[in-house]
Image 1 (cartoon, helix red, strand yellow):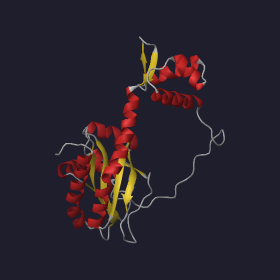
Image 2 (cartoon, rainbow, N blue to C red):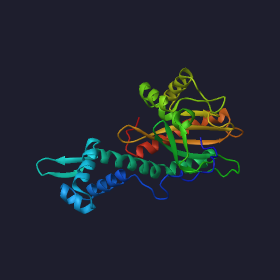
Image 3 (spheres, rainbow, N blue to C red):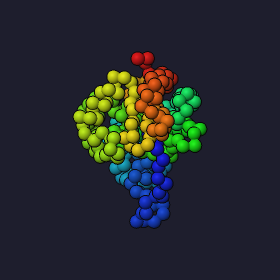
Image 4 (tube, rainbow, N blue to C red):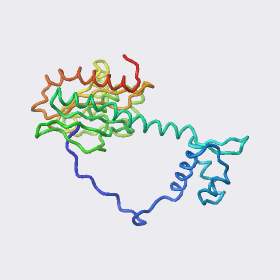
Length: 270
């Protein structure tokens, strides 16, 4: 985890020039925003407010309703925000909360171990690194916020996979595949799931040069109040300093600090 990344590239070149948008999506998001700003609005109200033909607004609203982002009250003939919009917003709040709740633990982990502490959250079959407290060593683990890596080749990713039922983990792995990044990457289901069973039993994972040669890390999952794993805490560093013996010593600390973060998020004590 946390190895240097390539310089980020710019936006892909679009066919329609700078500022091109998908009109239907743009209008749908405008409607969703309008629904969120006031409870119970008629089709006429929304149509006039956004300058859309009523027929267009209705098609967009029924599409939002189909996916749970809008709700319609037959009695009052009014539209309002749907439950799925709440779930989406709650996912953002969980992500924002986990970053805030992890800052002290990340600094403690960095200061105790002397290596870089990382925080990442799940996104489909990948994890995205959202925060880091860097080591003071001149040679250290480093990544840019937004760095994405497959779960199976990441300490945090494997810690998250280990919390899932096997079928759920297999579904994610089918989406990403399990191609090798280094000779140490676990690229067979037997090897990977044997590792995940050990991770689940002890409470933390080890990335032993599985994503980047020369880098190791220890990670543990972070849980939300509803029991879902919403992120992971890790500490990573060069193999010269982060020896296998040191990994074993560090694991219980990472596990304990991840549990402390989980408690701050309202998760029940194990």
